[in-house]
Structure formats: structure tokens, C-alpha cells
Length: 303
Image 1 (cartoon, rainbow, N blue to C red):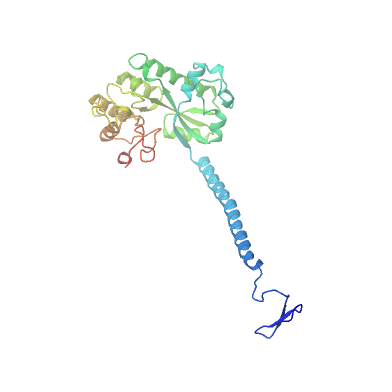
Image 2: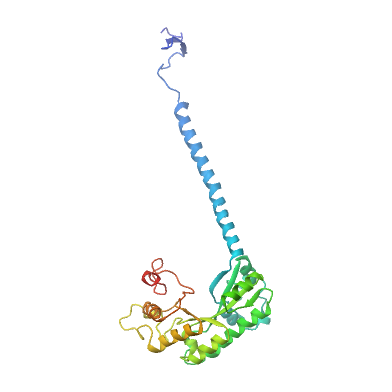
């Protein structure tokens, strides 16, 4: 190769390519390497975009299916403390609050935040709701029965106040009837055996007033049953259900009132399962294996 004159190289196919002076004939342009990375990047980006577009579509599809199912079959919520929120904030004076409005703006003013109002019940497509007649454990041995009656009363009054939204029901047939009418079937549950004041007569009267489940305990023992606080103790107060407690379960079975085992101890759960002749419920509990708090339900009970 002469200085200043392009070098000439014959290819294997006898072609001629011209190389600029001073350039290595074996040199491969960088763009060939960069192209691989650019193409890889573009393909990866396209994959991300496709996934980003597909996942929301799949989620939307699942949500659409869920909405369709809830339009065909009533979704039953097993536990709602809205009556107690009403008691704590307006002392059950329904004239003081419009339950048909979005109650979130009242959150800062209210003592207890409400997660419920009629617009959100409708938006969530709730088909039937167990409203809870609850009173705190400090009413035990004093006025628990009276407080429970007051809460059953306010449930019935707000159901009656909004007849286009709610319908009081006590049976599965009633749930379907309300659902077909476009209303939320409203059932009553009594939370806490302390509400009975250890009286079978109180239990039967609550049933006659429309209650369809009894949570055996809340966050306190009664003279006949242990709450979740006793789980793991060497000497639990009642060691599950006493003989009277077992009679309460049998009377619930006889009445056709569900046994709710949320809030009870592990021993109480097993005692109740040994006695009951009807299925039990856990109206508001989680699985202990997922959240290892003794307020929840262990796998051997769920099995």
C-alpha cells in the first residue's frame, strides 16, 4: 500500500472494497455491536409495554366477572359495626345524620370513623349485611342486655327509615327476596355472649327480635366461655366452654341461630365444634397461618 493511496483488498468473492488510508482492514464498525443492544432494548421495552397493557385488561376482566357474579348472587357481609358507630357519634338519634350521604367528610368530626354509608354499600354491591348489635365488655354484669336491645332497636329503625335500600330479613329465602327487589337484606347478629347475662331467656328473646347469630365472646370471658385472651394460658378461666356454655350452643342449634366463633379461644373453638350439630361461622376472623394472632383461626380448626 502506497502512502496517500487507498489500499485495495480483494474479497473471497473477488469483489473489491476500498479502505481509507490508515484504516485497519479488519476493523468492524461499532454500530454492528450497538445494533444488537438497541434491538434487545426495543424487544424488552415492547415486552414491558405488552405486559403493562395486558395485566390491567386481565384485572379488568376479573373485576367485570366479579361484578357480574354479584349482580346474579347476593354477596353477604358477615359483620358490620355501623350500628355502634351510630351510637357512639349520634347516640342512635337517626334524625341527626343522613345515612344516605357519603359519610367520609364527617370522619374528622366523628369519634369513630365510619367505613359504611349507603352510597358505598351500593358501590360495593353488598347483597345482604349482618348488622351487629354490640356493647362493650364493661357492660357485663351491669346493663349489657339493655345495651344490646338498644342496638337491635337502632338496626330496625334505620332499616325502616330507608325502605328503598334495606329490607329486614331472617332467613336465606328472605335474603333472596330482598336481593331480587334490589334491596340489601339486613340481618342481625349479637356480638358477645356477655350480652346474654348468662340467661337462656335473653337468648331466646334476641332470636325472637330477629338475631340470627351469636358471637360467643367478644374481648372478654363470660362465666361460661373463654375468649381469645385465654389461648396459650396455663390455666384458662373456663378451659373453653363450661357445661352451661355447651347448653348455649345446643340452644342456638335448636333455635336455628348460628354459632359465631370469632373472638373465642382455640379451646372454645374445638369445644363448640364437638357439641354443635349445625355448621358454625367465623364472622370476622383471619387464618392463624397467615396472621399468627390468637384472635385468628388455626388450620386444625379450619380443617
